[in-house]
Length: 200
Image 1 (tube, rainbow, N blue to C red):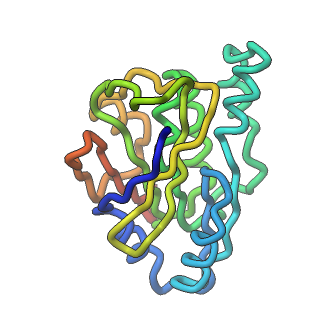
Image 2 (cartoon, rainbow, N blue to C red):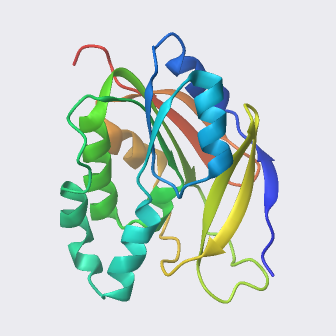
């Protein structure tokens, strides 16, 4: 049986600080709907939250055996106009994407992010063995406990984690966004905070 666990986050507080001072910032969350997160970001920052659960899209492509079409799908996945989003929560979705899909997703996120907007993502840095009792791949719900802690709740999926991206490739993929925070946690996760320059 796979159980949830609580862990620290070094970047979430800085992500929230990056949204401070914006009236009703618009937040794009790429994970599944988590009611307590909607409440947290609504109460903490007065955010309007848009949830676009990419794990469902990935699983649909796995089930239909159309993973080769995933990069092109991501090109048109987001209906948002350019430079309309103040903050983006990617969580660990990039861990489940092949290189071409990851690059297409990053391109779209850079497009919708406003100048001076912030993007939070985490990337695993090593290939970890499957958790004991895991009979199939799992995704993770990232549940905000407070500004310094997340609850990680695994749930069943169809797509296993892909080979990890190296730091240099992550940086290039998100250019011209700038890395403002970069933390390597004890659980082999790298938390990264990106900011879009105010003028590019």
